[in-house]
Length: 321
Ligand code: NAD
Image (cartoon, rainbow, N blue to C red; front, top):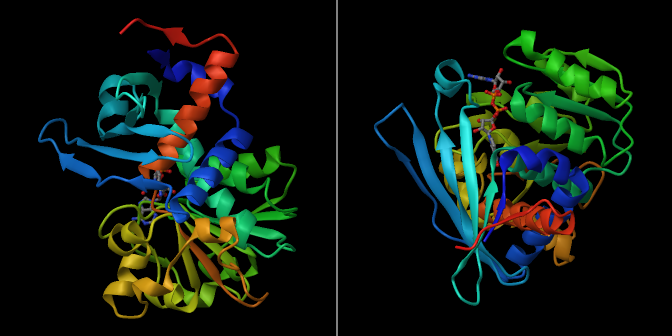
């Protein structure tokens, strides 16, 4: 068995590899070559923790496994650890033997950023110039860094409920050589691409805040009840997702579906666009929306890529197990 510790991931995994791994697995999902298994997520009744498993099998990439982990809200204060903790287990699909144990914390941020980045590449207008951020927390910095690689943006604008966090994304814009401007929500109408990445349970982004032709990547809503975008904005957009079953139950689309404003059959997998079986954006005026719910296969794809890199670079730990 190979072990790749969390501390090695930062030097091993770069955005290009994350992007490629996630794009490939989305394509495999849409082609029917990869499927996610039902997600388990439970309040364990200890340390206020939410713990669970996300697993799946990608026949195209021959990746079988699961990510185990969750959210321990008191970690930082009590233990000096980050609140989100996860580990990926990979198994040999031919024998069921455990193949690898990989730190999953940084990988989660990279695979989530790669998902919105894939959506921007395939759905945003080619001439997109202004990117707008809604959210400025831990994930937002990864999201923005990955997005900046997809188009020749010339400006970053951002809004956050807690404005004191905006310097987090301003720093990423500056690193990318771009000006940053804090805006109010109506100011987001200037954006050609908007990423939402907050832990909101009520709509923030309204239809009037979004110009025709914008691509929106909704990345924060990954749980029943969460919401970042008004249901009528979801209804106005052409909606793409990682996995339709998750989008309609725990993704951003859940609210438009519940309100009867969108049908499940209107929501397409992003993998169809990658595979060329759906044309994706159909006009420069269309609003496209990616409902990025986060699937286990994304975690397995990036973990598998990390194992390959660790072996190639001679830093994989091998254990006789
Ligand atoms: P974080 O705690 O670092 O940041 C939270 C962000 O949400 C901040 O910008 C904060 O100001 C904002 N916020 C908090 N409460 C809010 C409210 N009531 N209304 C509006 N904004 C609010 O968290 P993070 O690690 O950046 O994660 C952000 C979100 O992304 C979380 O909801 C997390 O569950 C989700 N997430 C999704 C995926 C996926 O695959 N889709 C993966 C990882 C995380």
